[in-house]
Picture 1: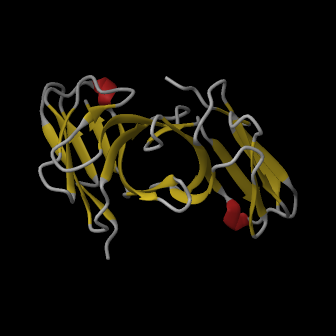
Picture 2: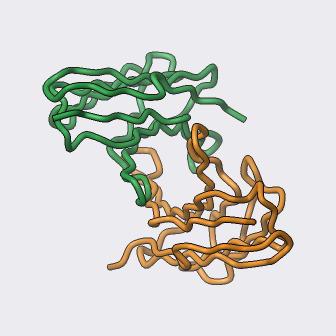
Length: 111
Length: 116
């Protein structure tokens, strides 16, 4: 089992604040994905990072893949209530079609 | 285009009963997966399939069986349900983004199963 640890597990912040969520492992992944999940629904893919050191931006969200492809971070600038949800990272192993999910970070943005 | 659908949405079983969860996708994806989600543990892979007629074990396969007789369907069976199988079950399908060199997963809405 390739363990992916996310931190923090829970995060409650005021609207307008910045935050960073971390996804760490001792294993190397061929790619890493970030998902957001809302209550009662399935996860929805936000981004995939493939190359070590890669940085991708999606509006106010910035994703980074570690140089060694073992860790990743998600930074949200000026958080909004609509960002509330469970954020999951998932690392692709083997031939890239098997995914190991992190433990999740539950974010609440208070208006 | 419905994407990934799962039936049923909710189910309550008694210990020892059996049931089958159905997952269907209309995106012509080759790969399909069954996960379970428990509080504080993210999603864990139960079984997966890389094509019609093929299946493979994931992280937590014990107590579950699967079949992929048609490309668009992936069935998850519990032969003798146990309280430890109380969970939310998600099905996903994926395709290979050849240009990007990775796989993108699409998830269904989940099935909430309670075993008493």
